Length: 274
Image 1 (tube, helix red, strand yellow):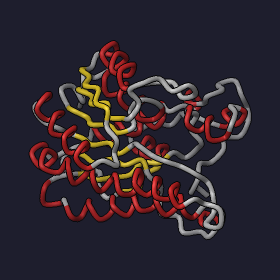
Image 2 (cartoon, one colour; image 1 turned 135 degrees about the horizontal axis):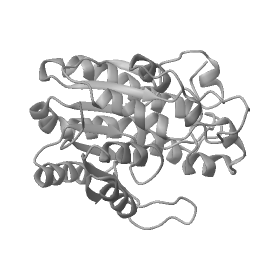
Image 3 (cartoon, helix red, strand yellow; image 1 turned 90 degrees about the vertical axis):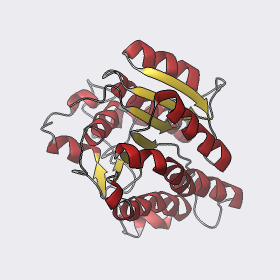
Image 4 (cartoon, one colour; image 1 turned 45 degrees about the vertical axis):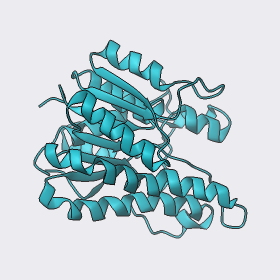
């Protein structure tokens, strides 16, 4: 199987996991829609829709860079229509855009909660709804970067505002998989077993010190590829962990995914992973 000629619409694809998924698919010759806000360089977060477009084309894919705010309904619907017209269809929507603030109820600003809700939960609903007419034709995929529904109280104690917006994404996965079953659309979520070394995490934590306990985004890209390369709803309605889906596809060695390959430090489990 291959993603050659398939069209992937990836939100938040200007850096991190979204960028890595784009480049992995581009190696097959896929068409990549880089849908993100970052049209201009950020002083602390490298990568724009245009720089990733160049990387996609260098890797062997076709690219369409679209500046999109996933909170803006008209912009989202317009971008999907433009992508469909440009590439002649859409085969997969990857809901990768995200917002994070690890703050409890007592101290979270409402505008920050609104931002997390709009970019995490609401955007999955909006983008999926807007992509639906095109995915019905392709019998395609919706893949959201969201966690398993771990209801242990520790995942709510310190940052429940963030937790519920990410869990909202995962609940939409379960619901849409059933709702879109007759349309032949596969709907899944994917989450890392360990911390992933991205610029956004570095910005959130304030340093790269923790990266010696992290893996690179390549493991998430390879796991996403395994899902997107499946057909006939063979994989659907699942809240997947990167390691698990790769093991199902015969991968048994994960050391090459370490950010610090010579380190013997213990890898740090990601949020919501016991």
